[in-house]
Structures are given as C-alpha cells and as structure tokens.
Amino acid sequence: MHNPATHLVVMGVAGSGKSTIAAALSQQLGWACAEADEFHPQSNIGKMTQGIPLQDEDRWPWLQQIQGWMSTKARAGGSTVLTCSALKQSYRSLLAGAEGRVLFLHLDGEAGLISERMQGREGHFMPPTLLPSQFAALEPLSDDELATGSLRLDISKSPAELVAGIIAALRLPAVHAS
Image 1: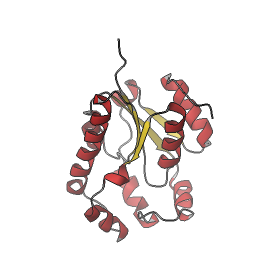
Image 2: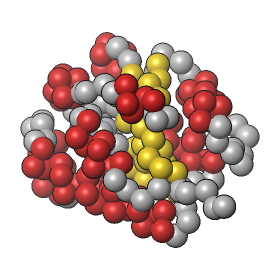
Image 3: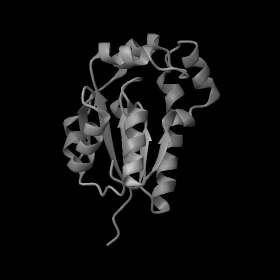
Image 4: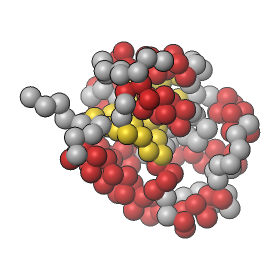
C-alpha cells in the first residue's frame, strides 16, 4: 500500500529557526520545501514591514493558499516541509485539512534567545518589535496534536541535533546524511 504524503510544518514565532530547520529537513528527506512567507500577499508584507501585526482576516487567505500548495503536492505523490508560524490552533486546524498527513514541529524557546537571533539577521521584513505580539498570539500544541505525532522542540539544541531528533522521533526515511 502506498504511504500517504506527509507534510512537516516547522512552526514557531519569528526568529525561532524555522527556515534553518526546514531547509535541513528538506535536504535530508529529499522533500519539497516552501517558506510560508512566500505565500503572503503584498498587503500583508506591507503591514509587517511597517511593524503592524497581522490580524486573523489577513491570515485566512494566506493559510488557505498554503493548504492548497500542500494538497497539490500530495496529489502528485509528494511530501513537503514547510515553514509557517502557525501560532494559533485554529490556523493549524486549517492547515491540517490538507491532503496527506500533517505534522507540526514547534520550535520553542525563550524570548530572549529568539530576540537575540532576530537582531543578528538581515533582509527579513519581520522586525524584532513584533516578537511580543507573536508570543502573545502563540497557542502551544495541544495534547491531541502531540498525541498524533506533532512535536515540541527546544531551540537551545543545535540545528543538527534538532533535525536528527525529528527524523528519529517520526521514523522518517532520510535520503541524504548530514
């Protein structure tokens, strides 16, 4: 029997390391990878660039686009790795409606560590001033989400440790060794 497509949604607040972990997972698994930021309409990017937090009405069309991308990949027989803040359980519920198995990998860490990381990055439209609004909106993974395979991960570990731990915990078939 053919295994259904799997979608790994690397989630967390801005600056938690989503892009780094997703790229490494994609490389090791040989799965398609996308950044949720690529799906934002220009109006959302404009708000964030100006330091204006997005509201739910800004996010629903964006999340629907992401869900559609995952479903399209699944129909073609592909599994994916995706970065997406997915801060609220309602957002994750919408994403979980994609075709295939959807698992959330919550990169969790202290606000101070994340803020420090954000100060050092360049070329991103999300300013560190929006970090408190991200933490305020964050709803941790529920017991139900954790029971179905989603993971909460401590970002104080190295990216290599996190990726190896994810692959082992989910029993995923790595095609490229690190």
